[in-house]
Each structure stands twice: as structure tokens, then as C-alpha cells.
Length: 167
Image 1 (cartoon, helix red, strand yellow):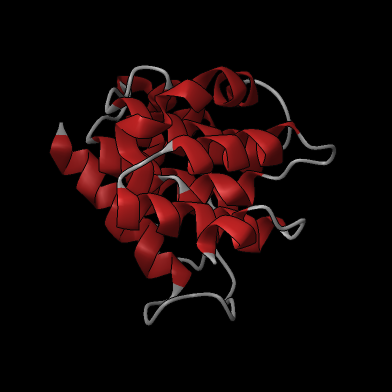
Image 2 (tube, rainbow, N blue to C red):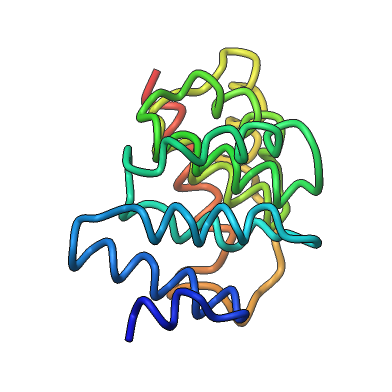
């Protein structure tokens, strides 16, 4: 059933099925084929990249499709590509500059800040921005129905403080 679902034209269904198949079998072939198809499809979207963490290093053959997205496309696409690149390679070198450029008081900036915190690295030139975000007395982000239990401002401040203390 998972193999059939991985062939679906519904990208959300096919990627979820392909990842589940990999998790059950340990065979990355279906997942790699499915993600390659989705990433090369017209109108590709970064949202499917967030499904890659369970594949880890097994997703390395997808890097030639992900790396061009680090420099082109929307901010969301670049952020998702940087995050995926870090998950796959375990090396922050390519992801950190992209994520640092996107950090700010916006929804994509918050996501980039969290991804940057996951790398444990912050470029020195980002420190003033991190201090401003961490200690801002005013609201920086609006409420969102997609927010977790904390207000997005608190998430932004917490991630900025984490990076400031990471050194």
C-alpha cells in the first residue's frame, strides 16, 4: 500500500508514504525516487523538504536538487533547502549563511532562526540582530493560528538567546 501511495500524484501523500516505506524497510530507493520527482516537478514547493529528516544521510543523492534552492526562489524555499541540507549532511557550512541572511522578525525569519539554533552556529555579524530580537520590549510577530503554545515572539526571543549563548 505504501508503494502504491508513493506513486500518487498528490505530493503530500506520496512523500509521506515514501518516508514511511523507508522507515519500515530501511530501503531509500522509493523515497529518493519520490522526492526527486516532487523536487523536479513544475511549481515545486519547499514544504516537502521538511519531510526529509527521517532519511538523514540516505537522502544525500537528492543534494544536487536541493543545493540550487539555497540561492534561488522564495525565502521559504531557501530556508527549507538550507534546513534540509543540514539534516542530510550534518554539516552546517552551507546552511548557516543562508539561514543567517533570513533571520528576522517574520515567520520565515523565525523558522530560519530555529534552524540556525539547531546548527549551534551563528555568524559573528548576526550577533547585533540576535541581541535586538532576544531583548526587544515590543511585539515583533503577530499571533498565528499555526503557533505552538508560546507566542511567536517568545519563540523568536528564546531561539535568539540560545544562539547568543552558543558562542
